[in-house]
Image (cartoon, rainbow over all chains, first blue to last red; front, side, top):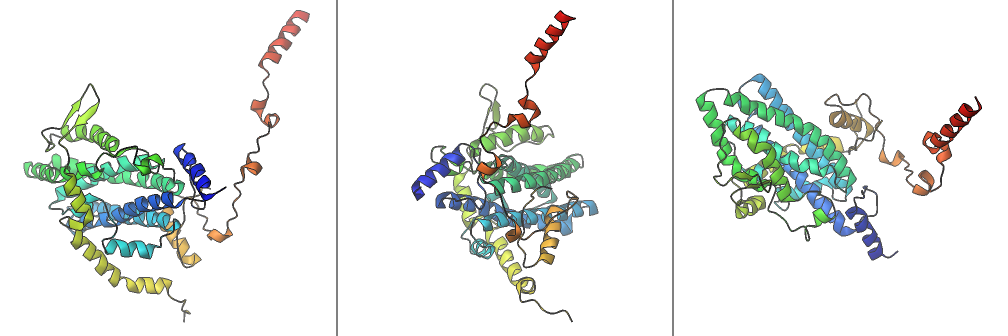
Length: 305
Length: 80
């Protein structure tokens, strides 16, 4: 069988719901597409801890401090699981890390923004993680089986984070008028990035990730799912969503909303977000400071005295 | 035992620590097997594992007795 015929058979297999394992024969295009997808996901988990890390020392109670620390540890663990999946596709983690720090690869838009208050911590853990889990649930059926298996594990762990976030928000909403204002203010700032998070609608005919079932749902479908589940839960707390166009059309079942700012999304994910460079700089410093750990683990074995 | 995933480590001792960290931190495991990838021999040949023969005689579902049973009961009634 020629390489082309083999590729045709492979693509027919994945388009019909077939699964791929790490040591199967994989055509270059598919391999590159999965790698790019998983690498960006891994990068996002790693960079995603930085907005929340800022709040460990400022958490209002010991229990919140423990929960937030645990969440951050979970996210770094997710990054490590995903870098492992990506490595098996042929890119060493040292290269992925170097590309992230050099700004050559991307991470999700939401992690390029600052946090201003504890209200942000609740909104992020609740709604940003919720938007992420809507995508991640769909990835549990990815054609690339190692990724799909990892997503099942990650989704189980993310569900705890959402509960934590919702609990933080509810506690604030049941508090003082000042605390309620803090939540509303945070929601006002985070709504834009949240609406951009799933990306602009793509053309199914040209979206290879969708055709090859690397992802199994389109961006718009994910956004609609997010809105359907979470807008009612936002409204029932007496919060307002800062979009006057947001409404659910009963007859079509679709949510209408103001078109997200796709220019902002593009600018942010290419490193021009308010916190993009500061957070990458932190990662660079951290990488240098932890060189001794890598030297100790990866260096030649030393006899114990 | 189910396959959970894999870790990258320079030796078995660290692999064990990483495995516990990733697959045991939330008390989700009772036991973990940690094995170097090279030690695994995989058998996935469908001709060997799922050959396309009718071997239904090996399964309870390969025996459909409903009509035979009805006929035998009916005959026993007649004779009885």
